[in-house]
Image 1: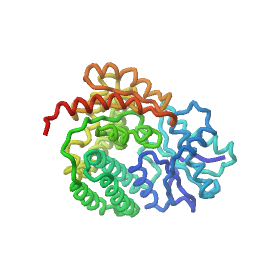
Image 2: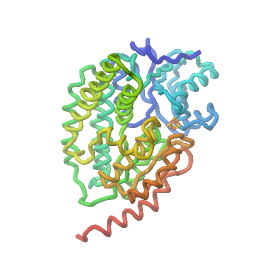
Image 3: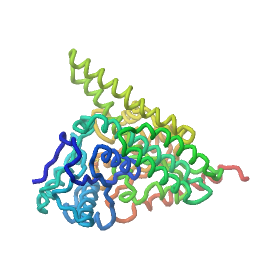
Image 4: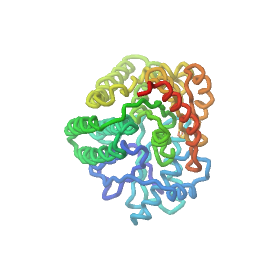
Length: 412
Ligand code: SF4
C-alpha cells in the first residue's frame, strides 16, 4: 500500500525521485529547487493533453481537474523516465475542511494501489501546520521561493504587453529564472536578493510602447488560475487580446492561513496558553512572513511599485462584505481581491477562474453579479476542465474594453 506521509518528510528520500506538480510556472520551479537544496532528487512534472487523458482514465470524471492532471503527469513521467514505484515520492499537499483538495492525496493513494504501485510514497504536508515535518530552514526558504516566483511572473505580466521587441521579456526572465533556480538549490540563499535586484534592473530597461491597456485581474481557485496548461494560457490570452493581466499570487494562501490561525485562536482558545499561541502567530505573521514579503517587493519596486500586494487583512475585509470569514477557503479571498483590483488598481475586468464543479468557484460565481453592479466592472466566471476553449468568453469583453481605452486616449 502506498503511504501518505504528512509529517515525516525529513531526509533526502533515500535515492527516490520527488516529483512536484507544475502548479505555477515560476513558483513551482523555485520550490522544486528548495527540495534539491535538502538532498532530494526533485523534478518538476510536465502536463500535456496526453498526461491529462491518462489522469482522467484513472479517475471518475467528477473530480476537480487539478486531481487528474497531477496524477496523470506523474504516471506519464514514471513511464517516460522508466522509474519504478519504489523510487517515487509524489508531492501532493493537503488541507483540512470540506473542500475536495483534502481528498486528492487519498484518491491518489487508491489509484496507485489499484495499479499495483503501492511502493509510491506521497509527501503530503499541510499549510495549516506550516509544513511541519520539513526541516525548518527549508520551510523558511519555501516562502522566499514563493515570493520570488510570484515577483518574476508579475514583472513579466507588467512589461510583456508593452515590449517593443516581441519575446524579449520572456527571454530575459527565463535567463534570470535559471540563475535563481541555481541560487535556491543552495541552503545559503543570500545571493537571491542580489540576483533579483539585477533582474529588476535589466528588465526595467526593456523598451516599451507608451500606450495604456485595460488591466484585467485574475482570481479564483489557486491551481487553475495559476496553471497555464489547464487555464488555456489565460494571462497570455488576455495579453494577446490587447490587455494587461494581474494574477492573484501564490503567496496569498500562506498569508491567509496565518491570518485565519490568528482569528481561530482568538475565538476558541482561552487562558495563558492561548495568549502564548496568539503571540507566536502574531510574531510569525509580522516578523517573518510580512517582513520577507516586504523585503522582496522593495527590491522589485522600480517595476512593481503599482503592483505591490495588498495586506491580507484588506483582502479579507473586502471579501467579508460578502461572506463571513468563518466560511473558510478561497471564496472570501476571491471576492475581496476582485474588489481591490477594481478599487485600487483600476482593473476594467476580472476573470474568476475555477475548475469545473469547484465548490468555492460555484459560490463566488453566484455572488459576483452583485459585485459587478457595485463596482461597475465586468466579471467573467470561467470554469475549466481541460477541454474546449473557455477563454473565448474573453474575446468580446476585451474587444469593447480595448475600444473604450483607445477612444479615451488622446490622438498622438
Ligand atoms: S477549491 Fe475547488 S477545485 Fe480546489 S479542491 Fe476545492 S472544490 Fe476542488
